[in-house]
Amino acid sequence: MEDVVIKRALLSVSDKTGLVELGHALAARHVELVSTGGTAKTLRDAGLAVKDISELTGFPEMMDGRVKTLHPKVHGGLLAVRDNAEHVAAMKVHDIGAIDLVVVNLYPFAQTVAKGATRDEIIENIDIGGPSMVRSAAKNHAFVTIVTDPADYDNLVAEMEESGGKTSYEFRRKCAAKAYSATAAYDSMISQWFAFADQQQLFPDMLAVNGNRIEELRYGENPHQRAALYVPVGPHGSGIAQAEQVQGKELSYNNYNDADAALELVSEFRDGPPTVVIVKHANPCGVASGDSLIDAYRAALECDSVSAFGGIVAVNRALDGATAEAITEIFTEVVAAPSADDAAKAVFAKKKNLRLLLTGDLPDPKRGGLAIKPITGGLLVQSRDNGHVADGEFKVVTKRTPTAQELADCRFAWTVAKHVKSNAIVYAKDGATAGIGAGQMNRRDSARIAAIKAREAAETYGWESPRTVGSAVASDAFFPFADGLLAAAEAGATAVIQPGGSMRDDEVIAAADEAGLAMVFTGMRHFRH
Image (tube, rainbow, N blue to C red; front, top):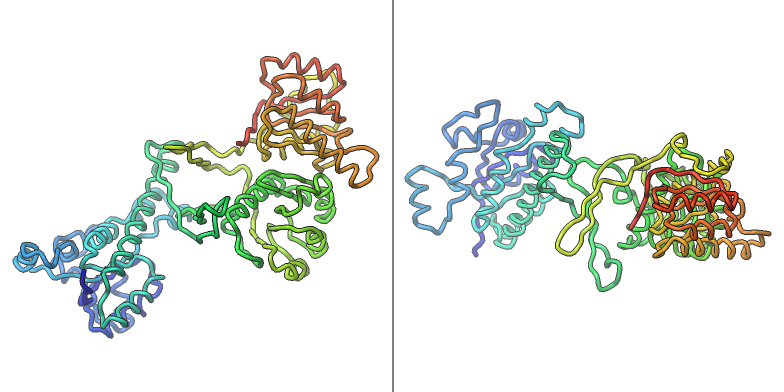
C-alpha cells in the first residue's frame, strides 16, 4: 500500500481540544478544510478558510442538525476505492470529490448521562453521522486517514511533516483500528444505558463490556502471564484503578487485586471510626477500628503479624505520620488511603519501593453494579454483593441473648467475613479481628486455623490468653453441622453470627445452647469465591 497525500480533510468534532492548532497545521500544507456547524465556526473564528459541508453536498443541514453528513457526496468521497476504475468513474459522473482525512469525535453521550440529563436530551446526544463517517473512513483506510482522538493530532501532524504531507498505510491502519474501538465503545455505552437505565434490565440479552487500557503491567499473577489494567468507558465511580500513585515502583497485577480487596473492605467502615485493613493474597489477615489510625493499625497487625509481612494496608481516614511510621516497621507492598498528610508522605518517601495510593472518596459499599468472571467458554455475571443486614434484623435463636458488646463484635466479625474467601470464619473482639480462617473446604477447619493464628499471636505478644476468648465468631454461610460451631466454642467464642438456613439448624442451635453461646441469624449468606 502506498502513502496517501492529504488534500482534503473533513473535520466535525464535539471536543474542540487542539482543533485550531490542527486546522492551522493542515492549512499550512494547503489541505482543504471541510467542516460542520460549531466546528466550522471555531475554525473560522481562528482565521481559517473552511468550506461548509452543505457546499459539498448541495443540501443544508436540517432537522436540528440530525442530517448533515449522511449524504453520498460525503460517504462516496470516503468509501471510493481510488484504484478501482468503476469507483473513479462513479465519482466523476456524480461529482464526488475524494476525502483523504476525517477528524471526528462523537457527541458527549457519557457526559450527558453523567450530568443527569433528561431522557430526550440523552437521546439527542446519540451521534449518528459521526460514527457513520468514522466507520466509512476506517473501512477504506487503504486510502483514508481517520483520527478520533485529540491526543493523536500531534502524531498526525508529525506523520505528515515527515512524509511531505502524506500518511503511511501503517499509520492509517493503526488509526482505523482505534476508530473501530471508539465506535464500539460508544455503541456499548448507549447499549448499556438503554438496557440498565432506560429498560431496567439487570441482564440484557447482549452484554456490552468495554474499557480503556490504562497501562500494561509487568506480568499477571505469575511471570509467564501477561496483564493490563483497563477502566470502564463512560461514567464510573472511584476505586483502586482511579487512585493517584504518589510514590513507589509500578503496581503489579497482584498488587492491584490485593489493594482492591483491601479498599472494598475498608470502605465498609467509611462512616465509622478510624479503621485499618491488612490484606494478603486478597484475604484480610487483620482488621481493627480504634480511637486513632495508629491504634487501629497496631490492633490489626496483632491479629496475624506473620501474614502481614509483604501485605497491603488500607485505611478509612487521612493517613498521618505516626501511622505511616508504624506501617514502615515491617515490609509493606502498598498503602491505600483517601489522603495523606505531608508527614506521612515524608515517611513513605524513605521507602522508595512502597506504593502509596490516594483514592479520594472511598467507594460506597452499597453501590450497585455487576461482577463479571470469565469461565471456559463464557462469562459468569452477577450483581455485586452489596447486601447489608441491620442490627435490628438479626434474629436471636438461642436461649441466651447476646450482650451489647457481643452484638457489636458480631457486627464487626460479620462485616469482615463478607470479604474473606469461603469457607470463612472470623473471630472478633473489641472492634478488632482475633483470628481469620479463609478458603478452606470446610468451616470446621477454618474455625480451627483461625484459632491457631490467635494462639500464635498470644504467644508472640505475651498475652495470657488468645483474643478468641470472649470473642464473637462469624461464619459467612450456615454451619451445616455443629462441629464448626463447637470448634469456635473451644477457641473461647461466646457469641456467634451466621446466616442460618441449614437443615440441621436445630442441632446447631441446641449445641450453642449447651455451650452457653448466644447466636444470631442474619438470613443472608456472603460466599466469596
